[in-house]
Image (cartoon, rainbow, N blue to C red):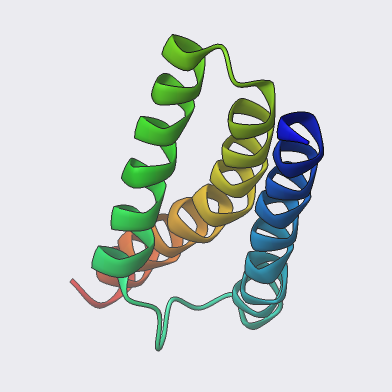
Length: 93
């Protein structure tokens, strides 16, 4: 039963990662950071990195893989936001 819950948990984390994909696509298509909270997405990214470290210490592959997928997708939003914000400030600054 423990393994089944671990698999479901891992799938839930993959689903969580997929929830960030529409935001990545929106930022990429608009080529703008408008409306994106860097604090929110940066905070999510930090928490996901902590989750990965916790998964490593707990030897929890589901947690490691799920949080890595979430960090990849959420981190993409964070990185794109930073990129477009810096680019916008250089143009207007």
